[in-house]
Amino acid sequence: MGNTIRQREGASDTLVFFVRGEATCSACGTGIVNGGFITKERGRTLCLRCADLNRLSYLPKGDATLTRRASKHSGALALVVTRVYSKKRYKREGILVEPAAIEQARKECRADAAARDKRREEREREHAVRFARALRHRYPSCPKGVERKIARHACKTSSGRVGRTSGAKRLDEKAVRLAVLAHVRHHYTKYDKLIDEGMAKRAARSNVQDKVDDVLRRWGRKARPIK
Image (tube, rainbow, N blue to C red; front, side, top):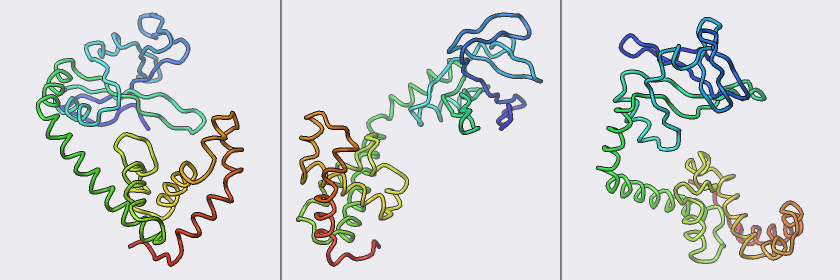
């Protein structure tokens, strides 16, 4: 992964790094403390001022629509990353763009927030319906309505639950099983009580595993392949 990401109207979109520890600008000698920004140019470490990037503002990752719109409106863009040494790759943290571009993007996001929320809710409902249908195919003997309850919980937007994973969106059997397993563990075993009593999660899961397996076997009778 090189320092240059792409060309935009003749200007390079540059990699900018979060400083870990301390760094010193090779051009002006300024010290950059932990959490500051640097970039690399021909093997030299540069502060944002010396790299002519100090006119840009930092927009953290997290809102894909805001990031996309700010990128579109900015004449210059730098990608902010941190180095993940253990995996020998870069992790994206956000972007540097022109302040006016961020403001314009925020105005646009405010203007159509309600419409985007409505579309998101519709997609969430549709995904939950598909997930519930796949669950019912895999566990045809589960109690009536349980598949919808599990799907609504697992597929809730921004929940970080298994229903939001790429596997769940493909409706693969592993994702469906994990969602059902979690539901059974919390609702059909003493798992939560063991946790409340101070037992470690791994030990509590091991303690209730036989009960979980028994429920899954009963629910999976006459199981059909997921369509």
